[in-house]
Amino acid sequence: MVGQLTLEETLRDHAFVQGLPDRHVAKLASLATAVTFAENEVIFMDRRQSQYFYLVTSGSVNIELHSPIFTVSVLSVGPGQAFGWSALLDHQETVFQVRAREQTHALRIAGPDLTELCRTDPGLGVEILLRALQVAAGRIVATEARFAEICGVRIKAKVKKEHSPI
Image (cartoon, rainbow, N blue to C red):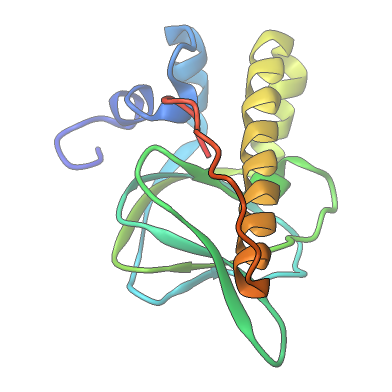
């Protein structure tokens, strides 16, 4: 259980899975594990093999571009949002580093398990992949905006969809 809710109930309330049929939520819940990260804990490093997909339930993490010389926070991800989309791809190195900004709770799903579920249940697979693409696209937009900010370029703000998982 996550707090007083079961994993399935917690997952059902998460923006990333909203609108999915209960049978799909149950399948995802069977793969999920509740995890907690301490403030400032590096959850995964960039340029490493992706392992897990995460759905944040409380707290927040920073998505960071990291190099030996600097680290730049691209955006913060909080409750109802997801990270770790590259875990859905075979042998894909992560692009970003992720660090907990505060104590953070999330649901973790192993990438290979989620990929296999997408292959064996094509209807669910299409939904998961479309939603993961929204997350990836959001990272591109956030990276562009952050670099524009660093360079002093003003970018017109884009309005996110109300239930967007990014």
